[in-house]
Length: 508
Ligand code: ME8
Image 1 (cartoon, rainbow, N blue to C red):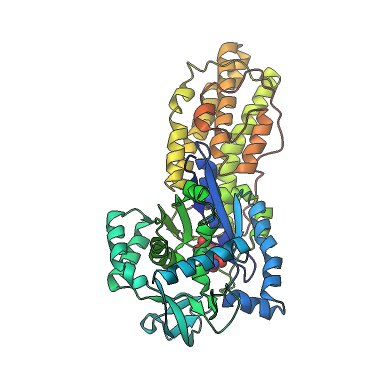
Image 2 (cartoon, rainbow, N blue to C red):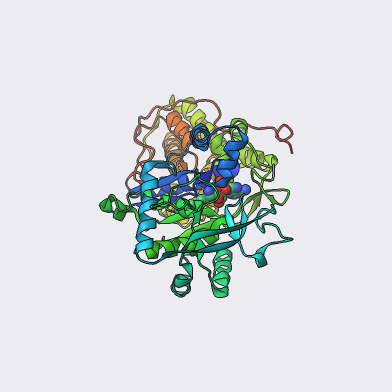
């Protein structure tokens, strides 16, 4: 079996409603998986993190059991992803037996080989982040990440021998300087490694909403449980052939606040199991509002459903990938979304499609004329574009990838302005007009395919208006040869692809 491009998102806590930050990481993973599929197999996993005190507290506050609470909330996440046209291959819930059995097996395996041992835990714990903190890391005696009160915990716990893996981690970081990106996060993790790593507790006895420790003695710490979703979903220990087709993951996407778990603890756990570390962990930046991370806890979360209704999910997907270099924080505002929508999508792309198809209807009854693929200058200029776009996307430089695609949008618009089809028509220069109209339609076909991973729904509409009958998500190398659109194809003009959104109404 050819090894698939395996991409994951964090699994989300279902302690409240999803917000646009959750859509962000998942959309990025979707774009990666869809792009990888243009040249081979891909597998995309997302899901929900359902155990732990935070979810148990949310359920208690709602007067329900944790399981009922989770069952009620999971569909909201699934609806969010459907609204944003996300096509995952698997959605894992940590309360599913297929996951729980793997976590227990891992625990037993590590207890047998001595990586897990019984000790006494005393220390500070933040329930909101489900994280233990050293006293020295607290800020004003509060959690350094979310600023909430921490609680003192003292109990007999099972520990994971993380300290044993420090040297191997250091060596791995030095030999693989690109395995954690962006560089700022790599450097931060390297600094933590140099300070030293302590063993950490992986069991809890003061509440019971979690996976039971085999043989009794409490439940497994939610983070230890959660990280294992990335391998339980693909058949670790139950389906070795399937597991080998996917692991190690190609890209694990996370927000930067959970880098410590994914780039220090996670590789060590994998090594303890005799497995490889993922190829890349990319810890992206935050969507911020007034300089603060958007989140449930700060009460500044934006409802992703309302947003999709207002701007269109595909415009938001485009905005999220185009607005800032991937990795950095970026501030969110409706005015900025409207600006991207109106300018890049409406004026550049939408108008190109509209102008081209209207001219084809006017001058050629909506039927694509024969072109001259060999002599086409645009065709020659864009021959290497698909490969370039794919490489940029798979190296997570979404912004540059979109800029590269826009070179084609700009080139086609410029050809209309320079060659003035209405003049060609008036002067009856039919061969030139045919060649131009053909290139415009073929260019639109290319744009629809190249932008399909980013805007799956709007590009499908472009495809429909173009009258294209082949598959829009076909292998790029085979389908993106200039001249691929058959002459004789009949186009139809539909509604505007990106109807203008007034800035005032969008809160500018
Ligand atoms: O941490 N900007 O779950 P979580 C960008 N269950 N991305 C954001 C964001 C923002 N303002 N807010 C959230 C957990 N995210 C654990 C993970 S994994 C084994 C367990 C995204 O519900 C981002 O990907 O708090 C972040 O890491 C994730 O949601 C956190 O989701």
